Image (spheres, rainbow, N blue to C red):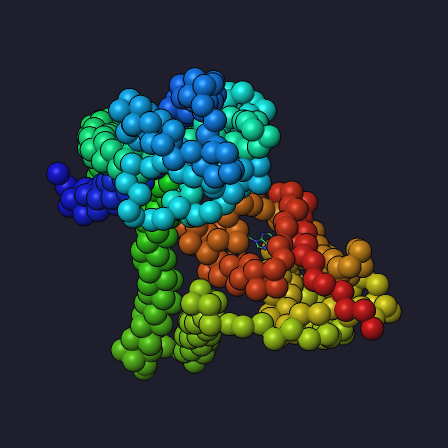
Length: 497
Ligand code: ADP
């Protein structure tokens, strides 16, 4: 068993088991209570139904020949003594009451009259319902010896010697209650033990099975996660949609895919970085080697060189120092973007004015190459909301490239157009164009430096432009056809005054 399984599964199983045991105990207790309640009801209902006619029989048989009342209206105690004797001999649990028509107790015959002297009245409503249903309904009546309890009874009306009332017989008397409670207790214990044992056995089987099923997927997932953690990057949860914990399985698979693809990306970035370092050192080494060569020649052949030669060598040295400082500046600038150290400070400014200024700045260079450099729509003042110095840098790189890659007599046009909420900035030249297969890579410093096209530069200019676009949440598009020219187009949000 792996470490993950060791810690994960038993804790979960323990919780599941506790939940199961609690449910079982709760079920067992409810089962016993419900069964006990209904068993008691059933018992009483049966006793009442069987003895429903006891009161009637008493009147019919015992009062047939003798009146329960004496001449002066008081109760015939000797007759009741006999009745008691007869009835108690058959059934010790009953108690007989002679009631007047208001429910008042005239006389009672109970087994043990010493304790709990009877009340002197019982309520008539249950007695009347009982008589009305002919003893077929389960009805509880007042217990004259315990006013808080209700008992099963039998009752029948009498009308003797001009007196009316009821014979009220409590069927589950004190004796009955004692025996019943005693038996119930015994059965309850047996029933409880039996029920708990049975439910425990079944619940244990069901519990084991469900815990096994529940944790089956979990075990599989834990194994897969562990495998992945140990370096098997191919490890995935098979058929996650069939898993009981589908969301978890899918999330794990997605997470694993993301990790693998990020690792791939990091690997390729790392490779590209290595290439960059190699290329940058190459870029630095070339002008340095040239510099070294000329400086050494100047030193060694100082006396044998003509003045013109000396001037030429110094000029070459100067150009290479320029190149080097240019390259170092660009590298420094690019690395700042790479390290995300540049935060754009956006503000409204006139892109028309900025374009004018840049065109003026590059005018001399363009004229030198006999290139016509102009601004389309020069009279309209167009405002944008962006970082002015970053946009200036991007435009400068684009115009510089356009001039650099355009042959004499060509044209470079900067145009500004409002399109919806944006200003579209377009730098079009009639230059050499960019081969279609190279177009996707021109903004990518890492790839570009490998291309032969870098003869005239270091491939950092467009990479910087791309970073500036990213910082403005916009993109730059290139439309180019070899030997016809190129257009670099990007959008900036227009500023509404
Ligand atoms: P570089 O310093 O080489 O000019 P850039 O990043 O500015 O670096 O440009 C990358 C490459 O894209 C260039 O080497 C060139 O091949 C191509 N390129 C850029 N702008 C133009 C253009 N206006 N016309 C033709 N080719 C261009």
